Image 1 (cartoon, rainbow, N blue to C red):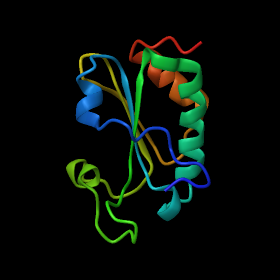
Image 2: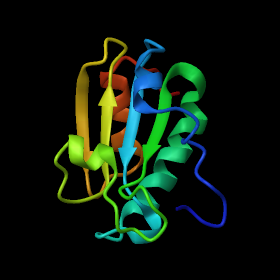
Image 3: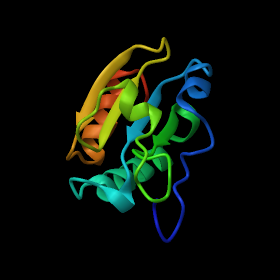
Image 4: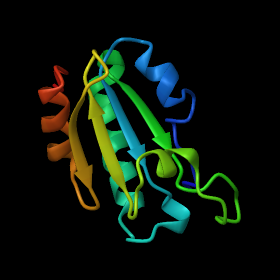
Length: 122
């Protein structure tokens, strides 16, 4: 739901990303319908970090709702029993969750979490 440009992180599902056997940054949040107002800034920070990291990690974004009217909760939200957004999960190459950032986070925090997952961020 990112406008005016679509989000670049919808090419793979989390399952597909984990099969690549490299670290994954998995963001759950809906910029157009965000309950906290921090989803768009979080996504923009993640896009900036992804440009620096390149293909050393895989970036995936899951919307909170699976329909455009924002009435049907998406499977990712149900699976993690989420009650707020955004949340960024950082997963290492062995599919282990290394870190979780909630609600408000910046590029430095994202980069540090990725480093803990074994990703060189510079």
